[in-house]
Length: 329
Picture 1 (cartoon, one colour):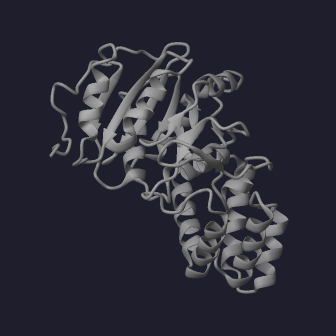
Picture 2 (tube, rainbow, N blue to C red):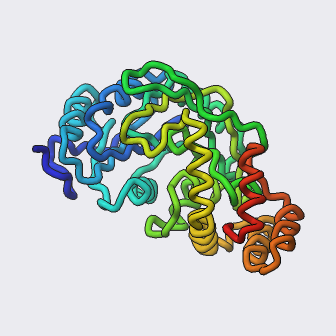
């Protein structure tokens, strides 16, 4: 059995960071936990990216399968310092991603979250960095995309929902449209994550980044062209292609009060970076907080409509109306 990673990881896994934050460097932030079954395909898809200036940082959260063996074999195929491994905090994927993102020894021009079981399209980094290059220096920027859904064998079975409404804070307060496995972002966005810190209680790392970038006046681009093959398998909580189960799950979460808990968690975390939130967005946030406390259901609904908050789909907005009337937001 492969032993869980500790800090520092044994010398065969260590490397010396040699990639500096050059004009087009990408730090790939890959979190692993018992992912040996599909990890090789993911690593190979990174190796075959059209964009070649990248460095992989693996944060392993205590794998007990062959995950680290897969990483070790792949590392030997790369120049020294191209793949580095560290121990994760052992507190789940969200904490693992935040701890990796907030590691200040990781430097690059751009950063990409990476799951262990997907397959990246060859032009993923090229498309993402091309858009990011057009954003003014100092402006937080986040690229994300739709996904192509594949089964355990890698065969296509569909697509994730196509979102057509603008990605901004008024959407991010109520919904995450940015899958973390598609995210590529710039240094200004990373600086905000690091300022907020790795120890915040957030719902999930990708929603948190979407909230941080939009609340602080950053730019988000949602690419309708899929950039990854998102693997659906037994370990997924709900297959992204099962729309009926997704809707039922949303209604169950709404009724059980999960959305209200999530909103409370996000609001509390956003308060930690309130000094960086734009005045207009801070006003929206404060009015949203006040609306959640109103006892009159119609007053809650009226306030949310006046604020212009929205979800991306008709079904999502109908569930928002229902949740608002029931006091479940």
